Length: 323
Image (cartoon, rainbow, N blue to C red):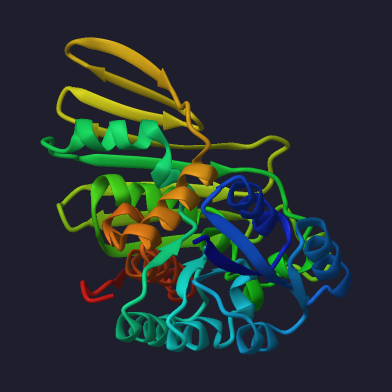
């Protein structure tokens, strides 16, 4: 019997997930939803699914095993709570929200329902990231350096703080999450952000450059730099300890230590691997196959929101461990 899946949001990231799900013989995508009527109808026709423009109607009329929530951060409404109450397993794209209290309420609904949850931190599924994690498992990390330096996103809502949360919350969250995955939880954050080079963009109110300093629970310290004022795209993480350095640059892993330097290229499709892990978790009941459950994504969100708060107040923000 196939796993019946619905999808809310069939834009760019939704289409990425659809490609993988349609290639999975265990899955049937039976319903899609998007506020863009044409997009919903076109996608529904292409894949032979029911099409909706209201997520409430989709949940009311469809019998689903799982739901992919691929909407912008400001548009989640009560999707997760309503789906969880129906016992529907959830895959929620990042960022999972813009308000921590709302996200905590959604997590409580997920936990109460006992469903499997996953979130869109796809970098965790790269084979080179797991190799880096294995290498670092018995080592003391002292310094972490990260960057997400790219070009402007033309999507209108992305330039509005109230809808996207800014670049760190909506985009560079991938790099921050990988830092957490490799180096552990964050205790304190201090950030500086400014809108300097992009003031000519109509309607923009998010910073275009950011410098974020973090303190990890292990005692390690970190610096993350982000911007969207470049003509190209570069993202990566570098982790240093005594006599070793681990560098992830895009899809390339370089480890340098007393034994020398070795480099490995990623070989997997991270989106496909991520989605198959979620489906397998549903199929087997083994939630441990999901590398980024909702509770973990909440911790990443807490750090990025704290960075925004710090930039606004000019003071460091401490993050409690229960966040």
